[in-house]
Image 1 (cartoon, rainbow, N blue to C red):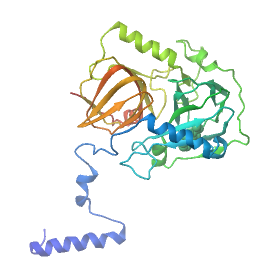
Image 2 (image 1 turned 30 degrees about the horizontal axis):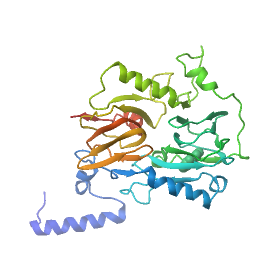
Image 3 (image 1 turned 30 degrees about the vertical axis):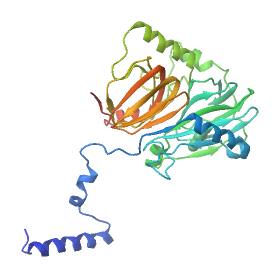
Image 4 (image 1 turned 90 degrees about the vertical axis):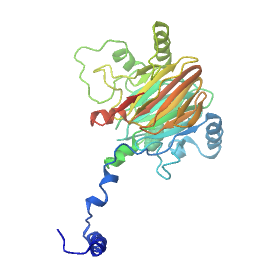
Length: 347
Ligand code: 1HN
C-alpha cells in the first residue's frame, strides 16, 4: 500500500478528503456507517398535542382569517425533533383544519394524497372528484392525488378535522404539482352516497375497472367502523400487541385504502395493556374516544379524545386503556411494504 509513515499517512488522508470536495466527490469509508446504519435511527421525537391545547388556538384562528382567504384554515403539527419541516414524521404531514358554517374552502387539486379524520362538528362536506360526502366525527375520508376537491359547511357549529398528507414523500420524489380550479366549487356530478353504494357494501359493479390506486370508497363512516370494532370485541380476545386492530382496505383488491398512507383503527378494551411492539413506520395516532396512555421507552403520553400523538419508527411502545380506547392511526407503512422495507417486532 503506502510508503508514508503512519502520521504522514493520516495527514495525507485529511488533505486527500479536502481535495476531493471541489470535485464533488467524497470517500465512502468516512461515511459508510452513517449511510448504512445497523438499524433505523429514530427521526423526530414522540410528542402529544392535547386537543385542550390545540382547540383554543384553532378557534382563535377563525377570528384572524377566513377559510377562503387562507385557502385552507389549518394549524399544522410539526414534530419538535423536525423543526422547520412542516412534518409530523419524516414522511407525513398532519394539520387541524377548521371550517365555519357558510364557509367554502376553494377547489384545487395536487399530487399529494390527503386523508381527513373528522374530530368535531356536523354538516360540513367535502366534494372529491365530483361527489359530495357529509362528514361526521370519526369518519375517515380519502382525497386521492390529483382529484379536484373543495369543502363547504351547511351546519351551524365549527367543524374540525385532521388532514394527513404524504407531502414529504412527494417532496422527496420532487413530484409536486398543484392547480387551482377556476371557481370556488368544482362541479358535483354524482349523488351523495354513490361511491359507498357502489363499492362499500361488499358488492362491486360487474365489469368495474379501477382507474385509481385508491379505494373507490372515499368515506368510511365511523358508525360502521365502530360497530365492527365492538362486534369484534364481543366475539373474541384482542391481539396481545395491537388490541382489536383493523386496517382500512380497498374493496377492489383487499389492499390498503390509499397508495402511500396506511390507515388503521383499533379498540383497546378498558383495562387492557398491549405487549411491547415496534415497527419501522413512524405513526400518527388520533384518539377517537375513551381514555388511556401510551408508553414509548421511558416516556408516558396520555390519550384523551381528539389528542394527537406521534410515535417515531422503531420505538417500542405499549398501549394502556383506562376506558375503552379507540385509536385511529396513519403512517407510510403501505409505501414501505411496496419497497420491501417494512419490518415489525413483537416482544
Ligand atoms: C390541502 O389541499 C388540504 O384540501 C388540507 O383541505 C391541507 C396541506 C398542504 C397542502 C394541501 C385540503 C393541505 C392541503
